[in-house]
Amino acid sequence: MDDAAALRLGMGAYSGAVRPVGASGSGAAGETMLLWALGQPAAQRHNAFVHHAAHSLALDACGRRLSLLQSPSSMATPGVTGAVVWDSAFVLAKFLEHAVDSGRLDLRGARALELGAGCGLAGCVAALLGADVLLTDLPDRLKLLRKNVDLNVGGDARGSAQVAELVWGDEPDPELVDPPLQFVLGSDVIYSEEAVDDLLVTLKQLAGPHTTIILAGELRNDVVLECFLEAAMADFQVGCIEQEQWHPDFRSRRVALFILVKKPPLASQSDVPLPHFVMTHTR
Image (cartoon, rainbow, N blue to C red; front, side):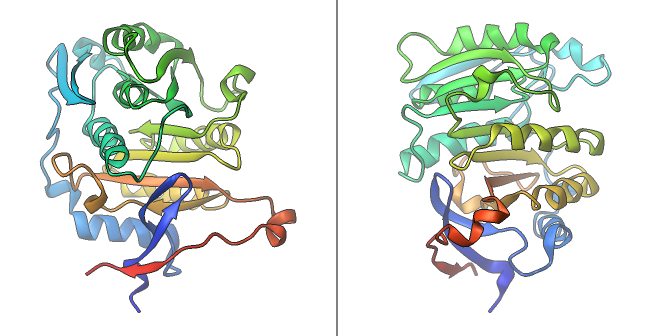
């Protein structure tokens, strides 16, 4: 059997096919090598869905035209990445819509949080799909984020959207995690080795036993991704959602889509029934 091709049906709240990371025993290094070998991200088109020089971008989603304001001039400031929309945000937003439309995901009434929301595309789409979403970012990013939420999530939305400050690594405001979150979303949040530790601290703080984390990220640096996956696998079950599960018009070999579910505490693992799953194989 080719373990690298084995798929598990369902992880967390997502009922579609997921390839468990490290199922073949190769761990984070093997997963990273697989993504780079199969996708050849450096050879793929950069910014296939976005235009960073534009002051706004449009996207058709959830039966309406979304308009995302950008701040291209802010990109000249070191460390500022949330002022424009990246391909991974388009992939994640349209994946959520496609997964809901195909019955693999249900966001109605779910409490969700978007990490490092930037321009807020994924969080706005999640709200339009019925979730009650907290879109979070650093204090200096919230002005643009609020504008996009106000512009795209109106009173006729099936869910709701609010903006809140969240600094990775800091203790989150109790209101962010009470009541518990069903979903944590993020696009392009795995971008530097320095940020990995704080990101994982925050993911562990936000995630409860019934939280599903969905992260999309561009494949820019294999060392950073391997570092993240290696550390994440200590506390989370990690899976990769293959491109066949994405929206057919928003697929890119430069982007990977991961799903994470918190492992039960070691002391109680023997008492927790093993999840039912079916092994299939890709060709």
